Structure formats: C-alpha cells, structure tokens
Length: 185
Image (cartoon, rainbow, N blue to C red; front, side, top):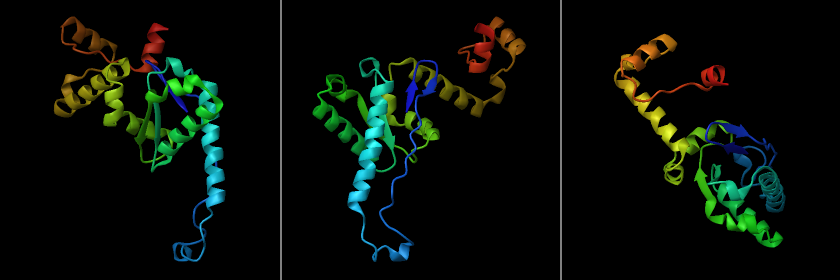
C-alpha cells in the first residue's frame, strides 16, 4: 500500500499473505486433483479484507485524487468489488463516495517495483494528467529522449549547471532528491 504525494512515494504497509494454489502437485496431476474453491475463496476474502482494512486505516479517501488498484489477472477488479460490497454492508459513505476514484489497472506483478509500470499506463496518465506528478514525469521522459539523441546536452555537477544557467541554456532543471534535501533542507 503506497501513497504517492507530489514529492515522494511512501510505502504505508506491506501485505504479504500466502494464498493456496488451485492445483496441487505437478502439471501432470492437474486433472487428478480437484480444485479447492472453498479454501481459495476463504484465502482471497482474508487477503482482500486485510487490504480493505489497511486502506481504511492509512488513507483519507476524501483527500485522494485517484485510488489505483493494480495486479496481474483479475485480482484488482475482484478487490474493487470486495471493497464496494464491504462499504455497502458497513454503510461507509466515504468509501462509496470515492467509488469514481478507484481505477483498476493491470500490471505484471504484485510487487512494489511494478509501481513504475502502473504509473506509465495510459489510463493512469489520463487520470493524473493535471497533477504535478504528471508534469515531472513528462519532464523526465523528455530528458531521457534528449539524452538518447545528444548526450552532450545534459550537464551534471554544480559548476557545469551554474555555467549552463548563466548562459541561458537551461530549459528544465532536474534535481535529484538527495541533492535537493542536502541543499535546501
């Protein structure tokens, strides 16, 4: 569970639960062992409920612009259904009011490193188009394109950057978090 702010991504909670597989044994035994639907259903309900409770505990849904649910397969869509069903049962108006903010996106894995993949998806870019994050993301993309064409157009280090600024050659200045924190905080 991550919170993306204007300036950083904050990991609020890591949820790591074991969910039993549909089939036991090797691929040759698939037809011999019947699936375990009740066990699977219970495990997924526990998993979804853990996520739902964590979401309620860590986020103020009224102040969020978008709530991204990303997963491989259909897990994110099932999670959204679970969240809405629970909010309806519990009468949580804040969750029901935020229904339009939920965006289900596909990603290749459920691990944290897939966040970059999710944020580059077209659906997310459209939803976040008017945010500072989107402007900064476009600036970084343009930088990488420019570097790919002409690597001598980028300057690194305070002295080189100062000379480029004095010469009026800076269109966009990108500063790393560590340098920003060192210089400005």
